[in-house]
Amino acid sequence: MAAYRYTRRRWLATCAGATAGLAAIAGCSDETDTSSLDDPGATASDGDYGDWPMERYNATNRLSVPHTGLDSEPEVLWTAELEGAGSTKPPVVYSDTVFVNHGLDTCTAIDIHDGEPMWEHETDGSEAIAVSEVGLFVGGDGLEALDRENGDVLWTSGHDRTVTSIRMYDETIYAGLEDTVIAFDNEGGENLEFETPEPVQSLAIDDNQIYARCREDPDVDDFLMVGYERVSGDQLWSHEISHAQQWADDRVTRTFPVIDKIAYTVTNENLISIDGPGGTLDEIVELDQSSWTRPSVHDDIAYLQRGSMAYNLDTSEEPSEWDPDEGADTPMVIAGGTGYMISPGGIRDPIEVVSVDPLTGAVNWSIPAPEKGSSHYPIVLNGLILLPIETLGLVALG
Image 1: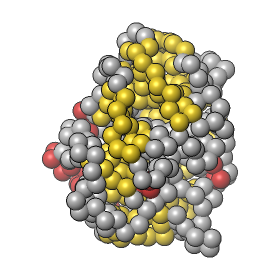
Image 2: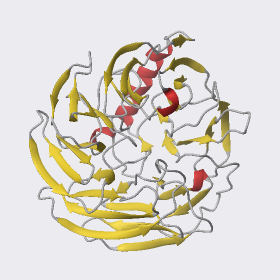
Image 3: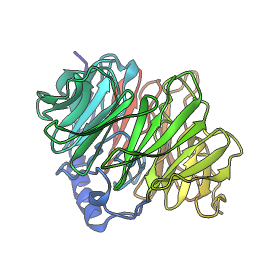
Image 4: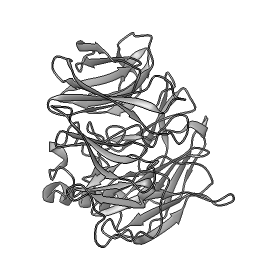
């Protein structure tokens, strides 16, 4: 079984809970200018730190989130050393429990206050994961719904295909199962099923559309962006896009934000937008260099290339005050008016979590990870950051 280290008292949880309550009342500025309850697929449990229900936060893959983040440089609260941590994936969070896929075939539930394990469940090895008040959704015997408290299987779809993406919206669970998208109700009944031209890498859902990024071969740069009508599953449009991958699983570019029914992604040369209802593709700006990361959008600014590039979506120009101190390895997460990134480590140095001013790119603070290893994007909550590190497991900063 995995080993765990507890390194700080849990009194901060009470403070974070109070902050979370104030944030819920006041709301916060983000790309949709709404509270968390209005965001597609967002959840609102009574947890101390807030929720992170899906990969890239919600059904529209936004990384500008309605959490407070951290006001000052943090310290390590706890470290969960996970079995097979070389494949630790980004976690999801609901009601003070962290759920993380790791070790190729394991999902572990962890207490967010002290890093202690609660239960384990065998999965199909994919990183697809989502959580709501209904349960935890992972890949296994097709799509599996688990009891959040003990990991017991509530229902399974029984498919023999790998689950590649899971999104939740309007009491419906949408799952990419290789080259098929299936919509399930909360009891596992199938509401919709349609085939995609190539295997699904990631999904996004809004009021009227299902957006799918599909790639036939992980060694080929070209991929498809395809739009479907959400109720019928009828295909609305398709675009073939070329973008060189950074590595085989393409984890930093394969998702894409959808904001006000517009999807944003990158080609080798351009930041582009695709209109959800009509499929019109527009080139927003020609990039000075190819971006290895997907766009993160906050207050009509798109952040690219490890946080070193920023463009106004209306003018296609760099913000007037933009002068970044450094770049990062992962897309920027914006919370409480602050940007958070992962800066690459050196040959002997660990990665660093970096806090930046999203208006200027100036660094507020940076803190090295406890050990060397690659990381996915940080999970930024109310007064807490969760950092998945491949060689270690999961680290909580606060």
